[in-house]
Image (cartoon, rainbow, N blue to C red; front, side, top):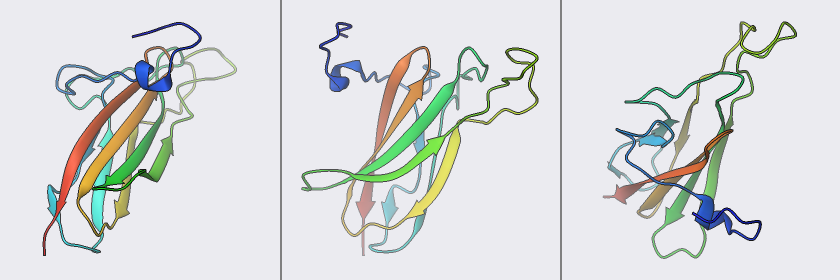
Length: 137
C-alpha cells in the first residue's frame, strides 16, 4: 500500500477475510433473487472478530454499491453513518450513546451483478468486500 500524498484511493482500499479481520464489511443477502423483486441486504462489521466502538477507534461509515453485470459504473445504493461512539463533555467513552456499525436496506435489481461494501475505520482506513448476486426467473 502506498502512503504518499499522490496515492490513489484504489491503492488505499484493503481487503481480507471477514472471518479473521475485524475491519472487513460482511454483506448478507440472498445468493439469487428474482428480477425486479425487493430483497434485504444487511452490512455489518465484526461478525466473527469484534471491532471496537470507542471514541478513539470506531467505524465512521459504510457505503453500499451495486455493480450490474456489463455496466460501466456502479449504483451507490446506501450510506450508513455512525456518529455516536461514547463521546461526552465528561470525556472520551464517558457518554451513554453508542451506534453499532450495521446497516440494512432493501433493493431490487433487474440483472445480476456484484454488491460492494466499503467501510471506513478512523484509524485503519478503508476496507472492502464484495458479494455476487444472481438473478433467476
